[in-house]
Structure formats: structure tokens, C-alpha cells
Image 1 (cartoon, rainbow, N blue to C red):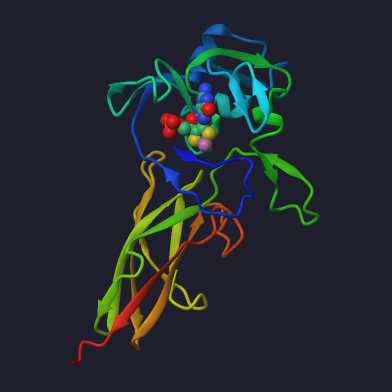
Image 2: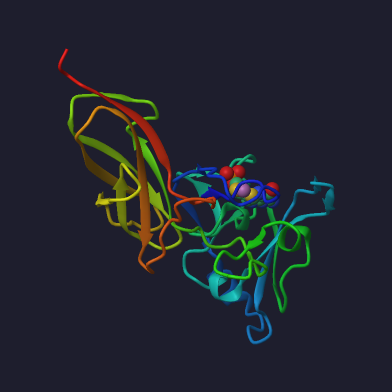
Length: 258
Ligand SMILES: Nc1nc2c(c(=O)[nH]1)N[C@H]1C(S)=C(S)[C@@H](COP(=O)(O)O)O[C@H]1N2
Ligand SMILES: [Mo]
């Protein structure tokens, strides 16, 4: 579950509100198969949450999101009633919520009260005003796209920011990488120029993946460790300027000779 962050902020800052939990629920495709909507006409599944209120000066009767029918029919989308084996609490969106693995948290509607198959996208504020972003693949910088798939991302857990490492040689570290698609490569750099391949564990279901890194230092002083993930479609984390740009951890290397 990866939050996109506030949709009114520019999409340039790492937010990393992310959790790795186990969900239990009824597959949405099963509910669709027993309700047998006209899939020729239905292109989107709208999901309504019970909450209403005002966000950024826009008021809404319901939290409403939509999913393209192809995603809604994929076997992993759940109408969930448990998290980590426990009934969903009210805070977590209980009694039932949508869980859309691999897509940003905003698509996983909490306090679910209605599902409907519709011919068009939802016209509510969360699918029109909010949670649409400039498509970074559009060279003109005008086309928008919904906040759907989680792009490849990574986080360095060790070393920690401002760790002091004593002695030259190899610095070992580890972290996490994730995205809508499996991460197949993580590279680590000390200079942003040469990249060493880390060891990445294969993905289980939609879990985040562990990586272990080892980089060599030849001098004392300050370093900036960066990690860059690539997913199986070849999409790489950008170096700067996006929510999922490569993380940087500053560390210090000291001599062990007194
Ligand atoms: N009904 C409803 N569902 C919602 C939201 C909301 O405001 N109302 N927020 C969404 C967003 S932006 C995220 S990141 C996730 C957060 O889920 P969590 O509270 O279980 O972490 O819920 C999503 N589902
Ligand atoms: Mo979010």
C-alpha cells in the first residue's frame, strides 16, 4: 500500500508512505462474475467510500474512485475484510475496502459502500481534479494521466543518514525496492556515475523486495549513496525531479588509523 502523497503537491518529492501487509478478501472479479454486468458497455468499475467532506476547497458527497475493467477483473484486486489476519478496523477502512495491489493507495477505496460498472470514468473530484498528474512520457508536458500504477521506487535502509563508517574498503548496505511490476535490478552508486549491481530478492506476490549492496571506498570523507531500481519492463527510477526519484543517503568514511 503506497500513498501517492497529497495530489495538490507537485509530483517531485519522495513521500514514502508505504506499508507491506497481508490482505484477505473476496476477489473483485468474483463479485463481477456473479453480478454479470454488461461488460461490452462497462469500461470502468466505480467504487464509493462512505466518507464525505471537503478537500482543498472542493466538497464531495462520497469518496469515489474508478478502475478500468481490465484491472478490476485481474485476479489480485480484492474487496478486503482482513489485514494481517485481523478484521479491518474502522481506521483501516473496515468493514470492507478495496485493495488494488501495485496501484497507488488512493485507488483502494476504504469504507466501501457501493460498486458499479459504468461506461465512463467517474466524474467526481478524486478522478477529475485530484489524482491526475502530468504524464512524464509526454515530451510536450501537457498530457495528464490518472494516478494508477506505482512506478519503480527504492529506499536505502542501511547505512543510515549521516552514519560514520570507520575504515576503507567495502560498505555494506540494504534496502527495499517496489513498484507495480517486479523489480529485476537495483544498482548502487557513490558518485552518481558508476553503478554497482546489488543483489535483489525475487518478488513474492506484490511484496516489496529486499536488496543488498556492497560498494568500495578508497578515500575518507563524505559520500552520497544512491540506489536505482529497474523493473521487468525496463522502466528505471529517474535520478531527480519525480516522486520516485532515486534516494540518496549521506555518509562519512573515517580512517581507522589513529
Ligand atoms: N473512502 C476513502 N478511501 C480512501 C481514502 C479516503 O480518503 N477515503 N484515501 C485513499 C488514500 S489516498 C490512501 S493512500 C489509502 C490509505 O490507506 P490506509 O489508511 O489503510 O493506509 O486509502 C485510500 N482510500
Ligand atoms: Mo494517499
